[in-house]
Image (cartoon, rainbow, N blue to C red; front, side, top):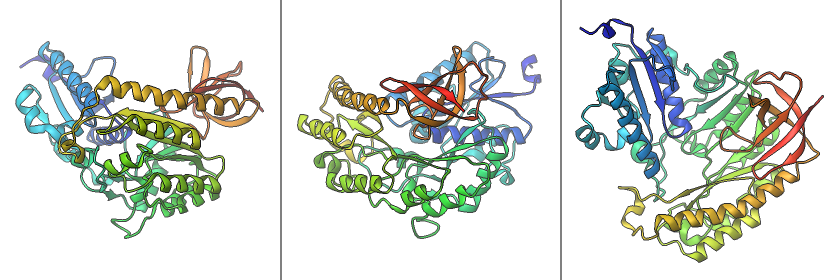
Length: 436
């Protein structure tokens, strides 16, 4: 028997992909810790002997990163640096049988909803009393909170229902308890995430219940910012925006992926909405909260997309002037509705179109940031880097949005809120000084 096996196991969890995966990893960490198993996230010390890789299988680049990470960890195992390599998450859920044949050195493969089976590998029990408990991998002042699992939508480009199953909402009382637990740990901001926020509650309450959930979470003492990610535009319940306006601790921020603005593309993508309906929705939302931050995500290079479609999309951006925009190039995914279509647009052309679209947004973003100069905003301090502090306004989410660069001679506490007067504007960031 190797001496190494006599040591207590230490598990390193590597998370790839989206924030929903991150939450899954945090829940796994909490369960392992409750079973007295040493666990860390993204361990740089390399003093662990077991790795769990939580993979992403969303698009080609994500799948490639997941495969490369698995191979890198298996190389460490071959060199005697690791005892076990386990793989879970979306890639494993989608391609488990094929991967198990091709990469036989992996010790076990698990799907997205097989947490109890992973725990069995460690002779650990799934502790139901830990509902909502998890070991945070984010800085302690913010956390992601998953309000539902899966998706019932049939967008033709998306493989997520294949990996995550149908929509399942978490009960309001469970989410309130989870929020209270997070606040006790020092969390001040929660980002509500789901594959589709606006569908929340239809399965368990038989009606769209996100407004009711928002009111319940806004009542949690100590929770200063609540942020909404991934709202589906079709049949969007405007009551969400009304609650946002009424409750001070719900950020005036809405992440609503639209994917495109050409009717031809929206129909091919099976988005259940037209450009005119999106126009009306945006105008109604901004009529309720004029200064709301609207973030959207787009896809370039979908099968059949023409230059005319791209021009329509650019025109749409110029009209509505979104505060934040992200863009993906189309990835041709097996078993999706669009897989029967011919993926004829070369990757270089997809990327060129994405760049063209983002150049339009870059100009809009700069103009919007320039309009902030001279104004004062409430800012949460995220970190100190290179002698300066980096924070965010209520209009900026973690990692994907603008940062506020703060020069301060005084020591600022990470996770605290300060008032910052903006002095400079850049394409995607702003700079300022603390004011009393």
